[in-house]
Length: 392
Image 1 (cartoon, one colour):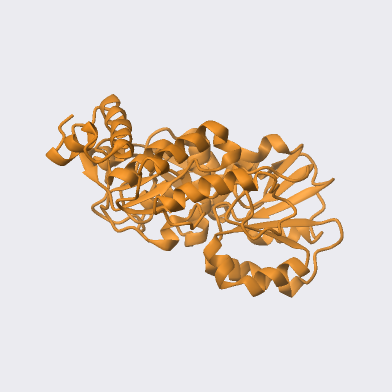
Image 2: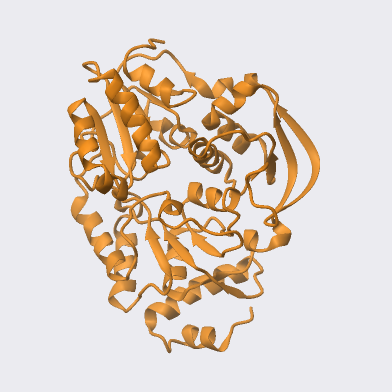
């Protein structure tokens, strides 16, 4: 791999142990992938920071980088941790607060922004062609597919390394020749687009190459759900969205066309009867401010949740700061709102029989925790379920 004079100095330790270690990780990863050189990034989004996922080895690694001088050289944001940062959630287990705090202190000490969210594009929307080093799969898919930026799906250690050095390897989706859609997907029934979570799961499970989705008449909130779902079930980091993905950031050389019918995605709508102790969950990925407000007004029109019902919303720290009064009002109505975390990277404080959600990603990662799981069409469907308007 070709390295500049500055990069050579970094690797030799002239900028300190932390920078040398970080660049070593990037260089070795790049060499394994055949990268000819490194590229400068403008934004790192650090994942793999939840103590419930990385435990003591991860904590020790992060703290070592901080204590030995690691500092952010580029704008860097932080993925969710494993605790509710408001301290009021009854669904999220906060018993690991001390361990998570130790991780957070090291990350913040290195100059990373404590946004604790999986939607970093809310804080800094990327521009077409920008090089990023993001580690949250759903965020990477949005960056590439909606904004036309350039990021591979990176592991947590590499995102921290990229933040400390300001570089990543030039391979994968950073290379224009690799951003080629070879499969055209066309919805054969308008109802397919009404359930973006199920559509995303189907794409992830059935399409291996980069697809182009025609007639992608889905609002931004639905695209978040679709891209997160496909990234979970199939590791997709780029889906070209017709009339949405910026031109010039992809090519189409399609040799295959696939028609998706409603019957193809019906199987993702649930298994088993909707009964027992059921958790309704909205906020995977985290809710945007506008999305949160829409759901807030839906809920207050309905009033207090029925006894025995449970609804969880997960939001970024910034949304909590903006609408803390509304969050507290929702809690008075029986809604659980967790801040800066989600069930995927945390532990639940109690067991549930079933899951009702609009998120294919949540279904994919949380299925093992529930006897029955449901993916309903949209937010309205989840709310109808938790208010007792759907019984099975």
